[in-house]
Image 1: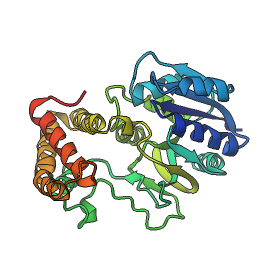
Image 2: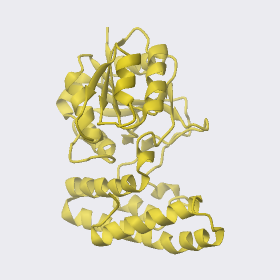
Image 3: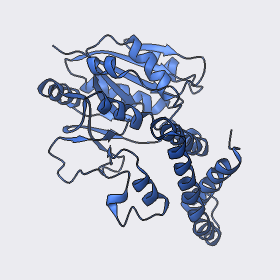
Image 4: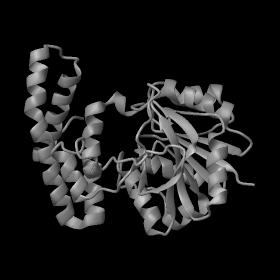
Length: 310
C-alpha cells in the first residue's frame, strides 16, 4: 500500500496553516503517513501553534527564511512515505483528495507528478495547468494580447473538460503529489529559486526525465492564494521577476535570459502610464489600480537599476 508524506512550507501564515492542517486531519484518509511542516522563521507564532495544537506533526524550525525550494527539499529529505504531497500553507484539502491522487498514480505508472483541480476562495476554478515558458507566450503576456489570443498565453489551462485527467506541461506548485521514485530520479527542487518559477522548473525536469505531469480533476482542493506572499507583496513581485530570469538563463542560456529581460521591461513599461492615470483619477491610495501602478513602477525600477524593496 502506498503511503503519503505531506510537506508544507510556511512563513507567517498562522491562520492559513492551522486551517490547512485541520483539513488534512479531517480528509487525510488511511494513506496519510506523516505531515512535515518546515517553518521559515515565522514571527507570527506559527511554529508554536503547530507544536501545541498538532503534536503529531513533524515540525522543522528554520533559523531564517530559506525560501520555498530549499525548505521543501528539507521536508523531502525527512519524508519516509512512498508518495510526497507538497502543499502550500494556504490550501484546504477536500475529502478523498489524497486517495484520488494516489489511486491515479497507481493506475498510471508513467505519471511522476500530479495535481488536483483547485478552486479559489470565491469558489471559481483556478488555472493550475500551464504551458512551459516560450518567447511566443512571454511576448503575448508582455504586450497584453494574451487575454484576446489565449493561444499566446503562458497560463493556458486547457481545462475545457474538467472531468478528464490529461497530460500537461506544468502544474502550479500550490499542490503536487509526486512519486518517490520519480523525485529520486529527477532530483529535488532547484534551490537557486528562492520563491516562484521553481514549480515550472521542476515540472520541466520531470518531463525531461521521461515522467508525465498530469492533471487529476477527481481530486479537489481550495487555494486561497497569498498566504505568505501577502506579507510582502512588492518584494514577492520582484522575486517572481528574479526567479523567471533564473529560469530563462538555466534553460535558454544568456540569449534567452536577455530576451525575457527585454520583454519584462516592455511588460511593466506599457502598463505604467494607464495604471498611473487610473490611480490618479481614483484618488484612493488603497485602490487596486494604485497597487498595480506601484507594483509596475517598483518592478521597472528593479529591472533597470537592480534596486528594489527590502
